[in-house]
Length: 182
Length: 261
View 1: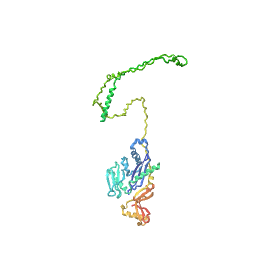
View 2 (view 1 turned 135 degrees about the horizontal axis):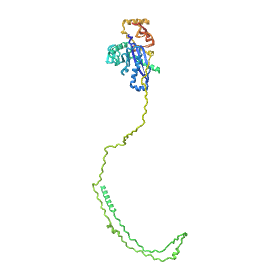
View 3 (view 1 turned 45 degrees about the vertical axis):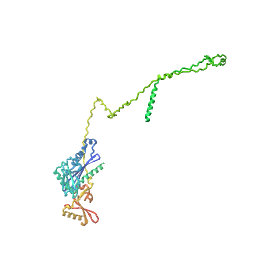
View 4 (view 1 turned 90 degrees about the vertical axis):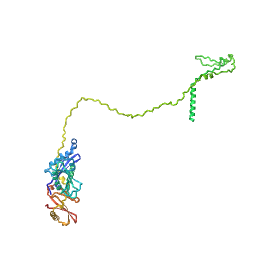
């Protein structure tokens, strides 16, 4: 059992007019090793006007994500975020491969551990026998070699845990923190 | 047929009417009948102006007493009178000549043509160009204000305890992938740890969980996993293989940590 691999799950949510984010670091069993979250940021009306559509990406990538990554003592092996955030054009500067994982409806691949490259940054990974493969999407900054290394780590972690579940946990934790704060 | 007769009679009547409409009527003054008579003073009233009281004086007696002799009226004599008007009738009559009716004389009626284009009513006249006015007073220059649009820096907070309280799913290891000797050793440790007969035990799964700090554990048979809640001490605790089993006779759950390989 590989205990050395650390997975960082990042999620930023908008609650009302405020933004806040959380970063959960787990081991390959999904057990939390660290969890950091930001205080809710409420942009003023003038800031919303001046930033326009770039407000949300700027808040998530430049403010929240950088703040949370700065707090980590050791960099994670994989930086995982939601598929929506990645599809929106992630331009963060994480030191590790940035990717998104998503359950798919594709037919199972031949055996566990098999991968199928559906696109330059889109790979299907078979983690369990008879189950639908996991869709892995990499950020544009991750080259092919880094993708292969990341796939090996994902395969090892996916043997022990559900790779998509921790993001839901971060979302629930952030919502509970907002409710507790208000 | 009757219409033509009626029209002819109407024409004849109109002809006669016009023929006699312009006749000059000569008035023949008849000679008056002269009656020879004499007038005698019979009654007379002598008016007296002034304020004299009206008084009627009967003079009857006086008439009879002071009557004058009058002649007896001569007897009427018949006298033939001639009417001369009729003699002039033929010479004074005017003959009116009627203008015969002429066929084909009719007034021509000209039908005015329809307008080729409907006239537009209610047309709005374009507004006139407003006149420009010059304001002599210059605008007062306003002061410049600076507003920093930068978003405030945020601080990260540690929230490990908050997320440890959430249920953490732990997937069961695939026992078939374990070495057979290792699984035999795990089974032996399970029997020793629970004190049950191995035939009375049904293994639900082998999980890798922290040795310490597990505050709650629930089994999810549908997905072959357990849900655990952890305490802060579980973060640094070593992960150990953990077997969850069910006793066949009463369905009770049994569990024990086994030594790792």
